[in-house]
Length: 502
Image (tube, rainbow, N blue to C red; front, side):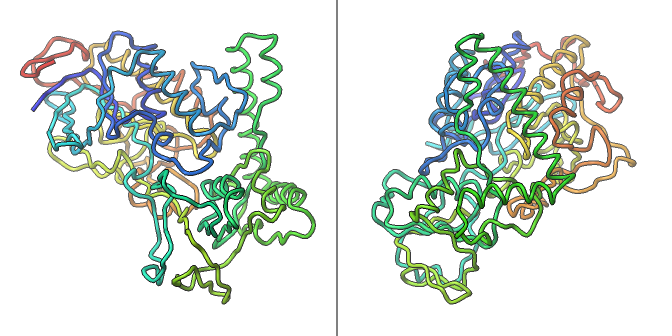
């Protein structure tokens, strides 16, 4: 059994994990670090998902890292392009040799006397255990279960003779050429699959229980393409990033403060693209904009294939699966050679791990989230969870910067560990995500809680978080700083290797 000790250990080598490691290189150059990745390659979501048309639903000027400009023409990028971007970042900061692949984290435990995390891993190939210890732990595991997505218990599913696949399990041998395909779902995955598959299928249908707001966004940022001819790449990137953050925030605020206005606008734009003869009931949700996440389609590709008749939308509920398809509650039958269950994700925190502190299990759902970055009761740990109403990486970038500031402060002051301490007056007001989406509601008992005021309240606002995460005082009276009780040289990051091999 091999033991390795690091100053900082990052769990996950996806968009967030590679970003965290790059920020450590930039902001904390003296720190030793490693990344633990369960899969055989880096990239996280962008390496896992292989379904047709996989792409970002946020523009890459905001989904990209603040320190690495996105240089391609398409700002709504394909999954392959995003994966290449992540790998380029890893190469730029020489991170490849720091990633330990094929390791599943089986336990994480904190010792207060040692001020140390012990992370036990199991190699996927042969079950060999490997132990890592670190002074600080960063969870970059994303927000869903990589093993399987969410699929409801459909009545009669065992009687169906065709092929059923969840997009999370898509494989290259799935042939949908000239086949009848039904996509169950109306979220980001479904609205991506429909236009991507429609040219090859004999017909493709999106079956939804209820409508979703779908907005058209430009696939390319034409202004940035033109500005690159005259201005430095970094300046163009910064300008586009600032502009797009402002647009995202304005749309969200208008949705919250003027929901009827935003609803009318979204529906009017959708109707114009679908034409006067299309039944708008399929795109008229019963809820207000941004009570659930808004879906984006580049250049209106979904609306184009619907208007051309290559695809259709059915709004109904499933009565039962049959041998040849789906019988709906209305009595309509949808024949299908392939059924794709784009029914959502199984949301989980820290990869589903239950951390222990001094031998006691700590339920994440019983912790308050601090600045959207740390958790009460869990020392020396940051958790990356991006925005739900804007690009994920905007928040991830700032949390990683905050973590680097914290690490540097602790080293300068000779501090061993810190933990956010909530008071009795910091009342829990429920899960830190305020969306009503099904995957969020289903996971409410797994999510950390938020409090009734800053820094325990999650606002989902980039401009609100800038001063809190990038410029606020580290020693704010809420983070409790302490020393380990076991004798060791002053300072947190000294690569103590007593009893450990390097």
